[in-house]
Image (cartoon, rainbow over all chains, first blue to last red; front, side, top):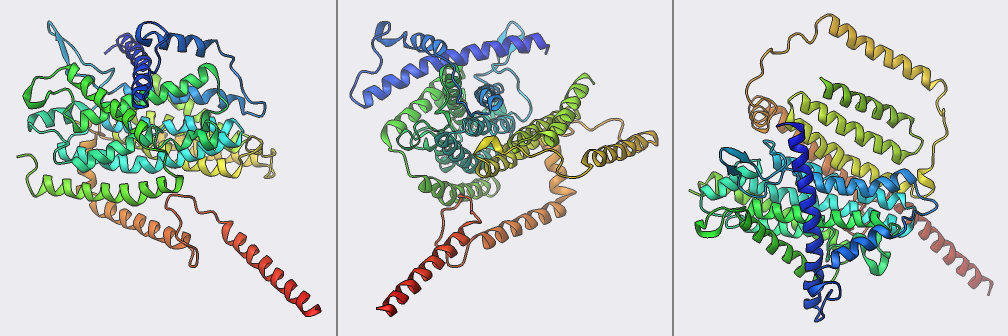
Length: 332
Length: 204
């Protein structure tokens, strides 16, 4: 695979993710609006559909400010780190089965290393730096508190998330995402059926990892103004938002690939890119649904829930999956 | 080879950055760059699993805790820049140590210490499967011993960190060492207050 080929695919992926971000944002505002018995954006374009263009113009044309006491280098680098990590983690996620155009195979991911799941986890674990550094470099108490909360929360929930992912790995015996999907289709059973607890833990932790409500303690606007990105404006602020949404895409794709059969339809209804898209959309709707339903939980409850409930539950689930695979013969 | 030179140079530059940076947070950042460069070096050596684990554990988890602690300790003033030259003649010692290590490496290379490497690697070398197979067969005993040692360390930390008379604190919150002193000072002031009251009562 030549360098130019990889470059073209990377650029295509970035454009795809940016477009998806823009319209997922509209979807979220619309759905939130309906949940709260109001309209959501309706002014720009038909049915508010040109809203992201207006938002983009606003974001780019805003003044780029920095606090006087800020550590200039880190302050400016942090949003770039966040976005870089979010985009990098998505690079190995296969968006569908490999396409064939007359003997020319086109895999639907930028790259597919043999242990792509491990790669996603490794790169995603770097995302906390952008957030914690951005808050620290702002030299403001709200931003610092937000970034400390974010780093403690993300490190804690990463543990339970990793254990839930390991249960999917044990179940399929594979560490590459296409292999995990293939294992599920081979056994005609989605991972979620034996591993329902693992999927539940994964879902909860994915909300916490993306710093989304009700786990958005890092940017709790009632107490911390806006948390770690309080001091950011314009396009640098937009970087944080875009990264948060792309992380949600990554998490929804992982959830669909690991537990929901990936790009294979239910009841053997063929394999297509559209099935994965449908599952991701359902997962993303779950993100919005949770956000509009539950109030933000208290910080000590958050940590207690993560360490005292989710981590032990994930260990128990792992033992169950090991018994299922080892003693009960797995899917056979 | 080109990748090795570029990434190796980045690793060296980052390592120098770690020790020359004036603020602790900058040092941590350089260390992260250094660890990521090492991960890429592992991957160029076909140790793919090791490279990913390097990022996941060192860059992704250990350094976050470093940053967390430093962020708590030096929140103000850009991390309190350390004045230059706290140790006398530290540059001289550093150069001496660097020359010794470089000399040892060059001598080892000259006398063929690395010639013993197998000319052809088995298929899948450095991948997860090969790594796991070796880890759970040849090196099972050291692996289990390490696990026991780590478990002991975790239990010890919990035993040391949890005070005797303190109420149970939420797990995951950093245990601040200053707190027992704060309690003590409150107790002292209470005692003083009481004795003061007693003295006043006595005066009456």
